[in-house]
Length: 244
Image (cartoon, rainbow, N blue to C red):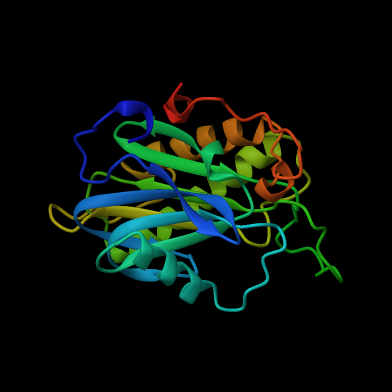
């Protein structure tokens, strides 16, 4: 597991692995749950609210143009022998760039690509620049959240992401392909709220903000451009995924 730590929570630290595709080894991050978890997600695979067993964050080349991302992610999950329902995310970022932060028991992981920032309400451009532009956020909250609180937690994570992007001086609120996943236990007393001043929303906001701020503070080169000899500022060791 990343960082060599086994945490007591039921969701693992992400495992770094890869898949063979077009003669290349493409990096993947996989979170596995010891027991089923409640989840809300905007991911192409496993989106919505439901019970999930795993999360997959898959790097893809910037030339990625498949019109069946859910099916593609499902095939990758099958290759990894991931059982049951899960969440699948895609990004042009090299997922070894993941940043993890923890606050009051809430854990957040972010892969941050800000090459195509846009203000959410800006007019739609004719075409997007071919640069890495996805922020994928995965959050684990160690308490059961009501459906409404799960939805609110997504909003809180998005607000925290946008706050970090603003502080980075990036001219946008996010990118067109950002995704958020929030997971929590299926059992226990139900928390009714997930807003930024709620019991669990507040540490969620701080953890997401810290992860996105750290990830966005360093240059990020798309994985496919790294293959062509471009250099990124990524850490040389997997242990850098730990909280710092």
